[in-house]
Image: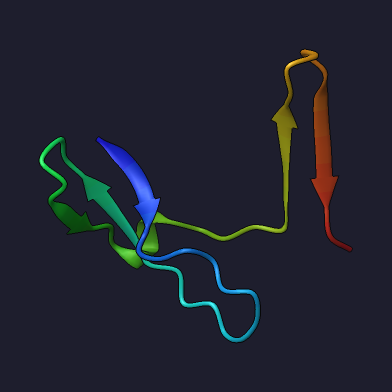
Length: 57
């Protein structure tokens, strides 16, 4: 299963993220809100192999 949001991210306004488990048939099962967490920091590793960390202060 993969995790996806319910809709594309809007360009403005209030964001009400909803997350689902999606099976191979495209059927969605909601993920409990207490099992997900939005954060303002993280990291990403690009094709160069370098890890880039970020955070909002």
